[in-house]
Amino acid sequence: MGVRAMRRFRRPALQERYVDGRTRAPFVERLSDEDLDRLNALLPWRCFTVASDGRPFGGVGGKRKRVDPETIPDPRIQLFHERFDLSDKHVLELGCFEGIHTIALCRFAGQVTAIDARVENVVKTVVRCAFFDERPRVFVHDVEGEADREGLLQADLCHHVGVLYHLEDPVTHLLRLGRAISHGLMLDTHYASEESATEEYEVGGEKFRFRPYKEVGRADVFSGMRPISKWLRLDDITAVLRSAGFNAIDVVETREERNGSRLLLLAERTNVASAATRSRATAATQPFPGSLGAVW
Image 1: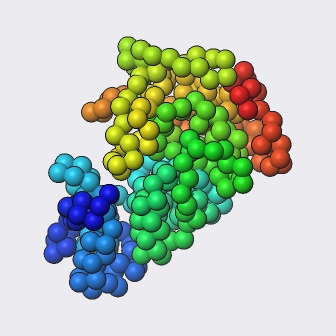
Image 2: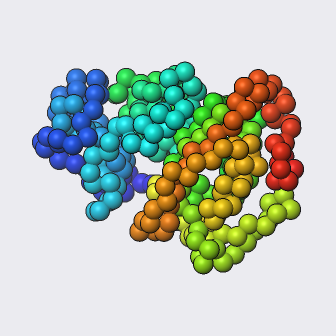
């Protein structure tokens, strides 16, 4: 993305004092209006937060996209905390975007690792979290790239919002995730209806129907990294999660959105103690029960 393109991004009016979405942001509140204006122009921000003094930090996503302040914490993160008590947990956040959920997770959890496939998102997350006085571990990682051989993604819990439906091979991804997460996850994703799942692909000898979805690719921050993503059916998502070791699944809600059906679920291992005591070597070599585990 060129400098000229970056300059075209719209920013919320700095002179406006927003009422909604106000949250503590210690090092934003220390900035002069001039410095905050420079900070807002410095990076290609596509969403914004509001400090407790009402001033906006960031940018907007488009003419009608992310034009309102982001809420910290998102109600889904509050639900996540209520279900799993994040206070002593290490949480892995997939797709940190610009650090909105990262900040909330840091405020609830004992430790946070946040990853994104786009380096610009990682930079924006690091910057935003620093101005909110939060210190997650953040780095670039493509979840559909090479397997995590260094164990950098190992965590107790996973915050998985707005990512699965952007993936080319969501089944393999969920199975890999089962090797990294010892306790549970919160998943929010689009899914395919029975009628829209017109194609199928194979993983580990099993076939999965999906809805193909055209992605713009690397150039669009709101798009997946590859040309086509696969939206799985709800029943297949829960089945794969069970094969990955998450045997207790609670579909909290399904809802209809502009682009299609969407779900929010919580998945957990009920044998957490035994999962937590597995050695890293065993986790890396042994499949979970179920025929799909054979792909590992």
